[in-house]
Length: 129
Ligand code: SF4
Image 1 (cartoon, rainbow, N blue to C red):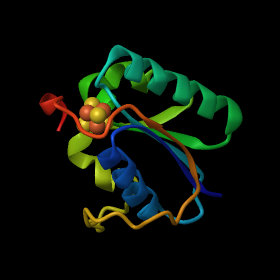
Image 2 (image 1 turned 45 degrees about the vertical axis):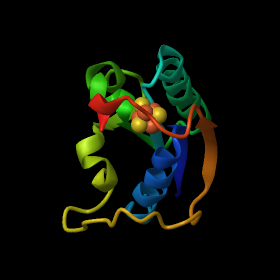
Image 3 (image 1 turned 180 degrees about the horizontal axis):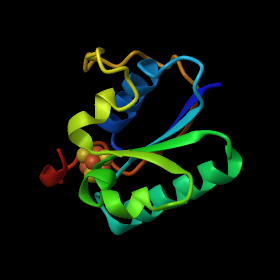
């Protein structure tokens, strides 16, 4: 059982993925796809990452969060293997038990990180945050 993160986009997303993984329930198998929507290519890579996660970790539950999930949750919710789609507002507590309010400070690289696709380091995509 493990939590694996696949992060697309900016450094902020990377830090947030660590926080999500740190607060995940122990003993559960999840792949967290923390998406980016800064370009159509970023969204395409997000979908590709979800399909790959489904292939490589068929028994894991898939959480999709981040900017692409914020903008178009329905399109991700219908992808095979996706169990949960969470927009940016509730991103940090998307795997946490209800009584946990995770801090915004990242925990460091405590969990297995599968990949980080650096699209850019910042973003003017203000609508998504
Ligand atoms: S803030 Fe911008 S660069 Fe960062 S994940 Fe969201 S859309 Fe991508």
